[in-house]
Image (cartoon, rainbow, N blue to C red; front, top):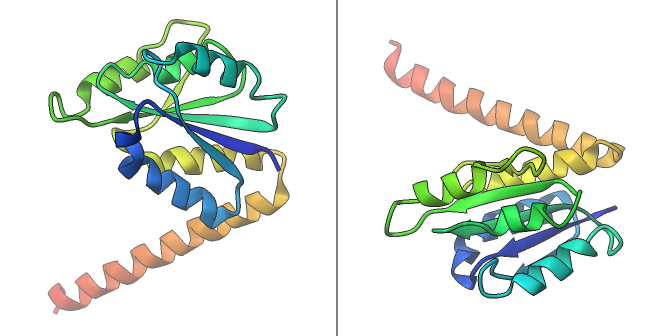
Length: 164
């Protein structure tokens, strides 16, 4: 199975990224985590992403806040799918990171999830890997079914409480 690369612009992004890590672990998807700032360590970002395919990666998740150029810098150096997680900060509550991540020039795509949307980033990575992995396809189906059942159960509780 291909690995997922998880890059953070700063170790302070870990509370958000931890949700992606937990989600990938729940699906049994291998991953590596690195802290590589697009601004402070551009050579590390370039080196990692340029060799990512040959190193067994299938998707890269890039999480950053504020001037969140990490996902774009990653996408500029690989043809692997890149998923950007804009992280909120105290200044603009993640709007700056969202715009920095989603506004990519034509030809350098970044799939962008919601601000702090690490679970969806991991699920999107799993979906990408599942294109060629039947086992992951089944795990995704089961995950969706469990979410559906949970929603139905919580709906029944509300209906029983209010619909008398």
